[in-house]
Image 1 (cartoon, rainbow, N blue to C red):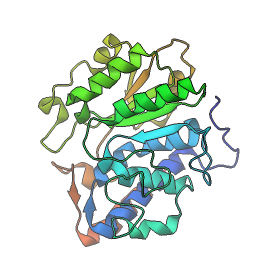
Image 2 (cartoon, helix red, strand yellow; image 1 turned 180 degrees about the horizontal axis):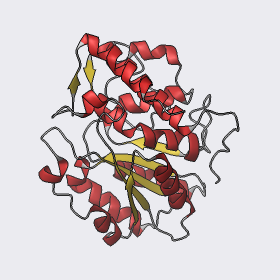
Image 3 (cartoon, one colour; image 1 turned 180 degrees about the vertical axis):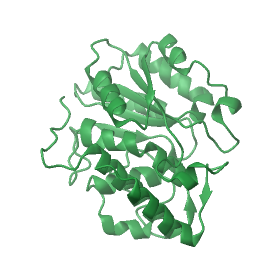
Image 4 (tube, helix red, strand yellow; image 1 turned 90 degrees about the vertical axis):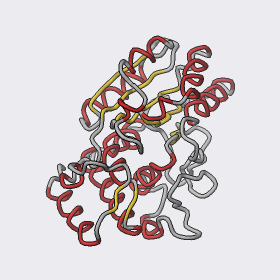
Length: 282
C-alpha cells in the first residue's frame, strides 16, 4: 500500500509539527499541568506519521483499509490528540474539553472514547504485543495495511516488549513498524540509568528486526526513516528509535531539570505559546 499523496498546497511538515505542539500546549493550559514535554518532543514524529506516512480517512477513522497507529504510552494521549485534531479526525473545538468529565479526550488514551485511538493506554509495556496481534491479523486477512506502534524507551525495561519483539520476528511481520520515543526520561529519572538501554538498536537487530536510530526532531531524518521502513524488502519487522528532546520548541521548559510531568504557572502558558510561535519554521 502506498502512503497518501501529499497535496501541493498542503502545509509543510514543519508547519504541521508547529500546530501539533500548539494544540498540545492549549490542551495543557486547560488542566494547568500534564505530559506536555513528551508531546512537544514527539511532535515532529507525529507530523511525519500523519502527514507523510499513514494512510487513513479523516472522516472515517474505522476504515478497514487504514494503517493503524497504536499508542502504547497511554499518558502521551495529549500528543496523539493534538495530531488527530490537526489531521481533522477530531474537531478542534473539543480541545477545550481535554481531561474534563465526559470528554472524548481523557488524560490517558482510551479507544472506547476517542475516534482514531486504536487501543487503550494504561499499564506500560503492553502496546507492542498488541501491535503484533494487529499486524498478524491483517496478514491473515491479506491486508496490505501497516501497523505503527509508538512506545517509549522506559517501556523497553518491560519483559512484555521483548516477548512482542520475539513474536513479531517469528511471524516475519514486515507490516509492523515500531517507533520508540527515546527522550531518556521517565518518572524515576533518566531511562538509561533506570533500565540500562545501551545498544538498544543492536538488541532489536539481535531479535530479528531491522533497526534505525535517528534524531527524532530532524524532520528530514524522520521522513527518510519512515520511507526506509515502509520500503524494506526483507520479511522482518522494523523499528525506528527516535532520539527526542523533552519540551522541544519551548526553551524555558526544555531546561527544567525534571519535566516528565510538568506543572506550568498560569502566566507561563501564553509565554510558551509566544516562544513557540517565535521559533516557527514554515
